[in-house]
Amino acid sequence: MMTKQVIIGLSFAAMLLLTACGNQGNSAANGETGTSETSEQTSSVSNSASETETTAIFTGVIQEDAIAGSDDTFSLFLKEVAAVEDDDQVVQSFQNDGVILHVPVEAYSGDLEELTEGATVQVTLQGIPIMTMSIPPQIPGNSIQKVELVED
Image 1 (cartoon, rainbow, N blue to C red):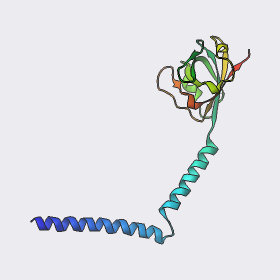
Image 2: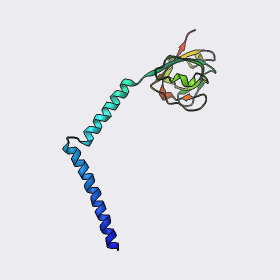
Image 3: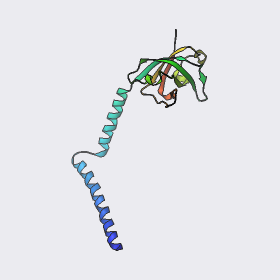
Image 4: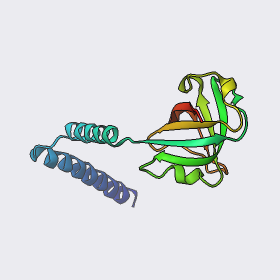
């Protein structure tokens, strides 16, 4: 009884091994190799991603003075958000409730004291930003390309 189970198990393992080797041989016989095919697909994906990466640009009114963070960032709470350029319709997500931005210091070239309640800023986002699903949504610094103060 035990010998029968061992023979069946070995036969099954041999069949799987031969099937796996046979599939690899067929793709090599057709002139395909797994590594070059994979690298071609990877390079075409990375090329198309860089070509299609868009930016979203919008303006918003600062609801509260900018708050300095502990890790080279500051937070801005924006209301009255309006799209300037938004092909992916990202800005639509925070037009009703506003948005909280966690801006890296290097994305803003002015003084933090200029970002006061009632001032208008223009924000440029890279691609489709990462956002929390909170109300209002929050956007981390790695999605924020530039923040500029708009003169009224």
